Length: 70
Image (cartoon, rainbow, N blue to C red; front, side, top):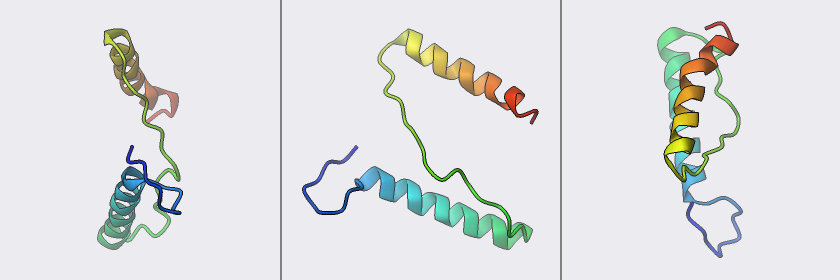
């Protein structure tokens, strides 16, 4: 993440993700007339340190929809 001495407490990555999510929400609401649509408020990006960590994340991505019966 981008670290700055600027008084803003958020770095560049947070601004990019926020802008992207704002645009996605606007597009979905307009295109699908789904005005209740929203995205997760915050995000967490883990740092992948090794092959084991990568496999754990892949497993989470594969299995997570089952937790929500999607």
